[in-house]
Each structure stands twice: as C-alpha cells, then as structure tokens.
Length: 424
Image (cartoon, rainbow, N blue to C red; front, side, top):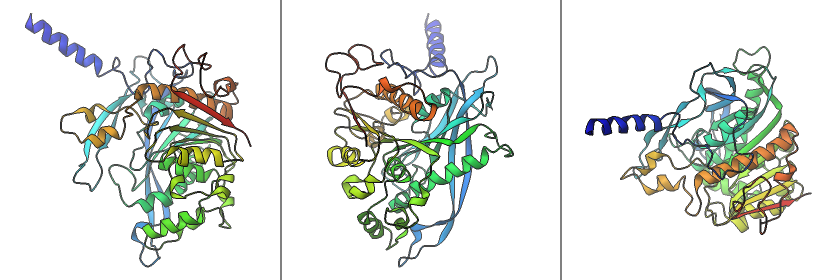
C-alpha cells in the first residue's frame, strides 16, 4: 500500500509540473471575457542586441561621460507552428534577489510557461502588430509572461526588453535607468524593423508590422514609455538626474524643451499601456510635459500605490495628460504590483527574504485574478488601436459597477475596480 501511495505522489508531482500545473496567465473560473488566449500557438526566442556608442552615465566624471556599446537581451513571443504532439511548454530561467546586495543574494529559479522555445514562426497570415514591453527597476524581461504569451496567442509579436543595469542580475546605478528607458524602447523598435525586413536573415523576417506598434511599461518601464509617447521630462527631472549622475545633463535630450525631442516621437507607435508609471511625485513631468502626451493611453494603478503614488502620482499623470484619449483602471486597495506574474514558487521557500515575495505580491488582491483582468483590458485596448476591433464596450464603462457587472465580467466579479475615461 505504501508503495502504491508513493507512486501516486510521484505521478501527481510529475503531472503538476507539466501541462496540468497552473502557470502564469492561466484562467481562473471568474476570468473576464477577453482574458482567454487567442487562436495562435506561441513560440519564444531570446535575442542579443547591441546599441552602439551610448552614453555611459554610470562612469560620468565632472559632468562628462564616456560612450559604450550597450548590450540588451530581449525575449520575443510570436505566433508559431507547433508540431503535432509537441507540448507547448517552456521553462523560463530567472533570478530572485538583487545584484551586489549581500542582504538579497541572487538565487536562480525556473518557472513554466505555455510557449515552445525556438518554434517555427507562422507567417501564413502576414505581418503582426508589435508590442514592446518594459519592466520595472529592478526587473526582468520575464516579469509579465502571463501577458506576453497571451498577446502573442492573439496575433501580436511581443518583445520584452531586459534593460541592462536594471535587471536583478546586473542591477547598477539608478541614473542608467532614468536615461536609458526611452532610448532602449526606440532602439528595440528600430531593431525589430530591421530584423523584420524581407531580406533579413532572421526568424522575424516578414513577421512584424512595426508601423503598428504599442508600448507596455511597468513602473520605470511606464516612466520611459510615456516619454517615448510625447510626455517630455521637466527641468526638475534634469536637475534630479544631474544630482544622481555626477552632473550629467544627458537627460536633457528627453525634455520637451530640447530642440530635438519632438522629432523622436515615432508615428509607428499607436498606443501605450502604463502600469503604475513612476515619476510624477518626483516632479519628472510638469503640466507642459504631460500635455505633450497625445496618443491613446491606458493607465493601470493601485489606489494605495506606495512606490509611484496614486493621487499625486499615477492619477495626476492621467489628469494632466489633457491631450490624450486616456483610461485609468484602478485596483482599489492595491499597491504597486498590479503588473507582474504571481510570486514564483521560489519565493515561498523557508528563509527566502520577504522582499523577494513582496516584489510580486499584492496584499489585498489575488495576483492571478489581477493577471486575468489585465489580459482582458489590454486585449480590448490594443485590439481597438492596433487591430481596429470593435471592443469599445469593454472600456467605456461606468466608473464603478454598482448594480450590474461591467461588460465582459461575470456577475459579482467587477467589484473592487474603477475605470475612468477622459478625452482631449
């Protein structure tokens, strides 16, 4: 009998670590209507890119900075052809902790996803819209796999950037993040355009429509994405940056007052999703800078965000972006972690620092539920602006669901959410 029980445990454990396990992005029974994956199988690949001759702000002396070739690792999810009988499963490799922090040493860990590594791209339907994803500080290109896989299954090519000097594994000074977020976004957009040309010797050749691009940014990723979309930084932001960066004025080029800034606003980018964007409480933007944001924008925030702030932070950005068609989805009583995957199993091990768990967790919300809701709303928003789908009913909602559930939500499940909408 004992042997049979042990065998049963072995079989159960094996099953739960493969196709039957609950993986980031899987659906809870109360997931809203647009949360399920789309019709496409999903492939995933890792690319190494080099952005040459960039300002090395971390080695600034007396206001002068050397140049360096800036490496970027990106993860790409895309519609794919999966051979019959081949499991659509992948093991991602990431790390907990923070580089150079003895209190939080780096701990490698793995977690599963529903994609196939190195799968053959499916170009039978032509080129797909591009979505560029930018993580927080510190963070990882694998922080939002629940969303990146989901969007790829719906007919997008999704590229998540591992921002050098801003990941768990290579965390370095904050000035690099302040300067490079918007520059990394624009560089990756140009690289995707180069790699998707008909003559490119790349799996992306003919697969990506970079003229139809969206940005998704979380925290510092939102800080950079909004700047790319036209929210030029303030003079106060340049001063703050200089104080941290040895007198460097390199951030000046990303301010609304810089003569060359407006020329960098790229018409290929049609919309942005900003999860908990950082910076407003630090004076990163003023009224003039926020007025420069003109593209459609979906903000997602927690009403108790203690990193980016809510009333004087994210909501203030929403209120000040007077020239944008914009939405603000608020998770009532949530803090800052309204974007990441759920806490990985590695954070639950005895002795693991609490900070590693709290980097993913939301104390008042089920993270898997947040993931499903984000899948729903991001699908609706990008579907409208990149695919011209008739999804307006999922966004044009009463501020709260007081009597009836919101469109696309099951009865009793839109509680705890607020949606605001303002037009130019």
